[in-house]
Image (cartoon, rainbow, N blue to C red; front, side, top):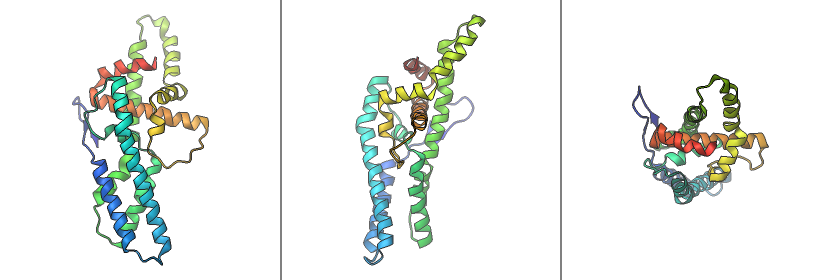
Amino acid sequence: MVSGSGNAPLHWEEIQLEENLNYLLNLVNESIGKTPPKNTRALRKMTRWRNMLSGIRTSIQHIEEHLQPSLESELDVPWNRRGLLTVSLFQPSTKNVFLEIQTHYSEEGATCDVQKLETFIDLSEIAKVLGLLGDAVIDIAILDHLWKPDVSHAGQLTQRRSEIVSNEHLARICDRFGLYEHRIHFDPETQEKSEMEHIKGTLVEALFGVIYIEQGFEKAKQIATILL
C-alpha cells in the first residue's frame, strides 16, 4: 500500500504478489479436487479462475524478467521496492475475478485468508492511485521544464503543456516502453483508439507515480524530459 504524511516521502508497503497468488491458486486447485465431477458448473467456474490466476502469474513473471530490467536500464531507475511496478500495471478488469473468488468462499463458509483476497481486490485501485500521483508529478515536472519568466510566453506554455500531457502523446511514450503489452488485464483486445490512448496514457502516469515513490521528484523531473 502507498501512504504518506506531511512532508515525509511516500512509503510503499510491499505486497507479496507471487506468494499470495500461489496461495489463491492452491486454494482453487484444492477446491477443484474436492468438487464432484457431476458438478460441472462449479468445476467450469473454478477452472476459469485457475486459468486466469495462472495468466496473472505468467504476466508478473514477464514484467519482472523483461519489462523491469528494460526500464531500469533505459531510465536509470533501480527498482528498490519489489512489486510496485507490477502493481501499477493491474487494470480494473482484474478486480472481478478476485471478487468472484471472495464471494464463492464466503458463501461456502470455507476457511481462507481473507486478507490475501482483499489485497488482490485492491490492486487495480492502487494502480489508479499511482496514476493520479504520476499525473500530478508529470504536470509539475513539465511546467518546471517549460517555465519562462517572461509573461509573454504564458500562452505558449499552456499550449505546449497540453500537447505533452495529452493521451495521444503519452500513448507514444507507452509504446516506446512496451507498457501496454505488459498490463495485467482481462479486457477485450478490440479497443477504440481514444480508449486505447487513454489506457496507455494512464499507464505512463502510473509509471511516473512509481518513479516518484522510488526516487523522488528530482529524478522524476529529470526523466520527464523524455516527454518533451
